[in-house]
Length: 252
Image (cartoon, rainbow, N blue to C red; front, side, top):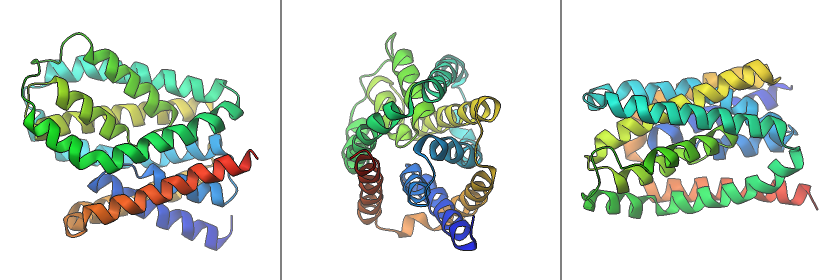
C-alpha cells in the first residue's frame, strides 16, 4: 500500500464516519474507494465492515437515555438482528463472488433510493402513530431481514430499520432512532466478529478506516447539522452509483 493509497482510505474513513453520524450510509463512500484502489469486492466489504464497526458504538451510547424502558424490544429485536447478521455474513463468505458482484449493484441502487427518500420516510413515520407497542408479530422477521442485509452489505441498513419500526411501532421517533442505533451496532459488531474469525481482512485497510471513522464520527456529530442535508444526500448517491458502475463495468 502506497502512502497515497493509505491517505485516500483514511480520508474516506473520516468521511464515512461523518456521514454515519449525520445520515448513515458511510459504506457508500469507503466501498467505492477500496474498489478504485484494486481491492476485490468481497475483501473490500469484509475490511470495510470491520473498520466501520467501532464507530457504530458511538451512536448507540449517545442515545442511551432514549433507550430507557425499551429492554424487552432490545432483547427481542437484538436477537433477531444478531441472527440475521450471522446469516448475511455466512452468505457473503460462502456464495460465489460473482453472486456478490451481481447482487450488490442492486442493493446499492435500493440504498440510493432510500437515501433520497429519507425526508419523506421521516415525515411519514412522524405522522403515523397507529403502530403497536412492540410492532406486532411481523416486525421481528423484518428486523431479521435487515440483519441479513446488514451482514451481507451494510449500506443504508439504518434507513431500512427506522422506516420499518417507524411504521409499526407506536413510539416517538427519537426513541425509535435510539433503538435503530443499537440494532445497527449489533449487526455491525456481529458481522465484524464473524469476518475476523472466518475471513482474512486487509488489516491495514481496517485500521485506517477505523481511525478515520472515529475522527469523522466525532466531527460529524459536532458539525453535521451545518451541512445542507439534500446536498449531502446527492453526494452519497453519486458515490454509491459510482460503486455500482464500477462493479457492473468490471463484469463486462
